[in-house]
Image 1 (cartoon, one colour):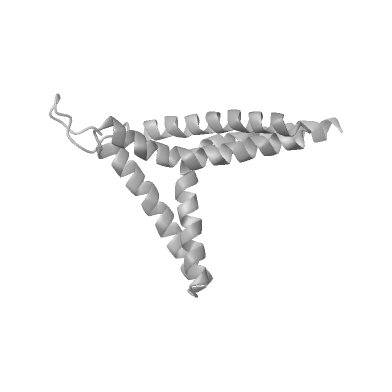
Image 2 (cartoon, helix red, strand yellow):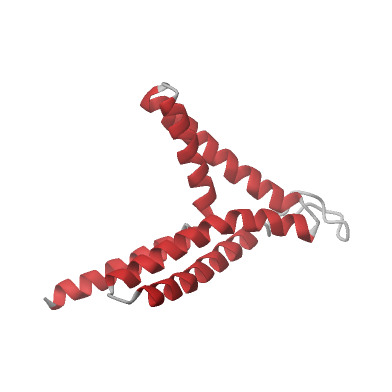
Length: 148
């Protein structure tokens, strides 16, 4: 019994780490799944749906990182970052509310824990997007060089 409790705690911690680590990839995953399903229902088959999903998700991630690296306006960069953080917040809300439901909390506590989880996961996604945009592809005017 003790071993089972330890293993459950370890798996829960690993799943929470995975949620936080992959939070900024929620939008590309969503785009990949929607594109793959659209192609699948269009009759392209399993391989075609998989390839289109991979390409659509990769393109979404590339365009988002490119925009974050090249846009200079704070408002436009914030809009792109929030576009990536919103699906992460939905994933965090769902995960935290599900864990609270498993724990037997009342529905009002489940919503509160879900909102806290959404805030934490979306903040993590924003921080990871901030790390991704620290590598710039345009010249730095003050130093006259390219950042590597």
